[in-house]
Figure (spheres, rainbow, N blue to C red):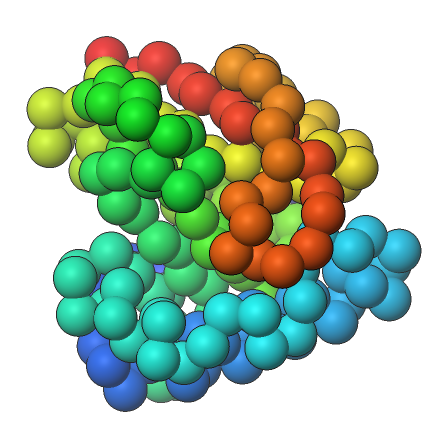
Length: 172
């Protein structure tokens, strides 16, 4: 494994970043589909939905020359995926790295950044999910110290059937 490339600083996303975040997600969705992984669908998450999360301070972006090259959504609850579980946790969604920077180590750096923010907020764990059939990401999160909590069905709001794996990593 090569040395990680330093991640550009993450900053809170601004409403003007919402379209770039949506475009990055759609590009990655198409790449996943072309790779045989049907986890994300282009257009599945709208600019308006992302803008709402930006307004709540959940989205953070890294940019190079004003282009969003990586991002993450970090929130303090996730009832859609975790139900009524009120564990003190940071919930990671939408961790994305532009394909031009794949293998840079930025995913690991973003997870570590999220762990620091969650710890600073008084939480003792990180949680995230991925498609159960995306064995590359299942293995990736296990290698980053996440343990499988359980498998579940994708929440109905997504309008399709898929099993997901819910992961947790103690950071306290």
